[in-house]
Length: 256
Image (cartoon, rainbow, N blue to C red; front, side):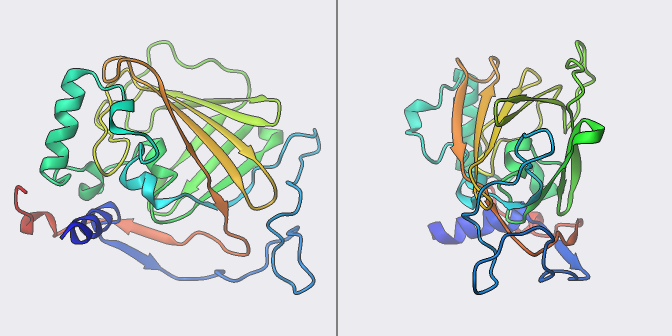
């Protein structure tokens, strides 16, 4: 029964995703280091940009367990809920995430985007002073690296506003301006309009990355808290087109 519930949650997360035109799934990526057998050498040194910073470009895949529960590596008592947020999280678990926004094809939060059951493509554009993230079935993200500040009075939105900077070899991304409707995961960790997400990306080698995510939302949590994830590179492939629409499962789900 438990596995059936988890599987249903995964189905909701990718509700009615239609793959269109599976092209270039096995096309060699230029510049990829190879082993003697011709396979991508994922333990080769991380590539560098002309300015010496790590080049984060590539197609990356997150870890599904964080899609289900962003706090999967924490003990339940280590998530610093505000009382109302704890009650709301319990309600969402008790109703098996029936009102999950992703089940209605609504946008995902940045932490959830990085762990959904499809890859994301990171494009480092040094000359344009920005980093672009592309997703299958989700709107892209623009991370501006030109020194602009975050907006002081942002119009609340699903995707928020993101700026980035380099801290040594780490790309640090600050995002604010969310509408309070997004969930941090399928389980339903809540957010409010005060949400501030800080992501720290570090390319360990050619095929491995560490990602530290700090959740700062004083209206939902009593303090900032962090999770650490490990996206992996998917070499020699590209994203597919996917569309989320007309999820018919919801009408057949009970209240629990």
